[in-house]
Image (cartoon, rainbow, N blue to C red; front, side):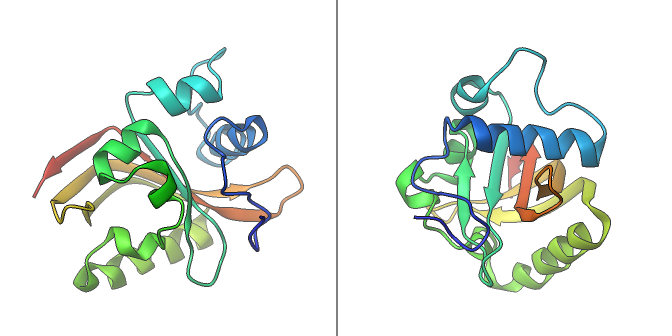
Length: 156
C-alpha cells in the first residue's frame, strides 16, 4: 500500500530503493555521506549506532522508517512506529516548535545542529542533540518526505 509520497511503509526496513533515497538525498542536500562506502540497508537498519527516522508527505505525516536505534530510542517496535503520525513524537506544547523546524527544512533543504525535546512511547522525555533533518528528494526532484538522524540524546 503506497501513501501519497509513493513510499510503501509495509517494510522499508531493508528496502534498497528506500535506502538509496535516504543516503542519496542526504549526500546531495547535506553534502556529506550518511553511511560509509560499502554499507547497505541491512547495516543501517540493524547495526547503525545512530538514529534514522523518516516520515512521508501526507498532510499529517506518518513515520515510514525507523532503524533499530530509532526504535529503541522512541520505544516503538517497527509495526507501531510506521503507523505513528510523526507529530506524536513531540508533546503537544512542543509541536509548534517541531512544525517550525519542518517548515524550515522544507524551505532550506536541511537543518543541522538541531536540538529538540521528544517523547518516547513510555512517556520518557528526551533531548535530541546535534540532529540533522533533511528533505527526502528523489533523483527526479520529487519530494518524498523528510528524515532525521542523530547520534546523541539524553533524558530530559
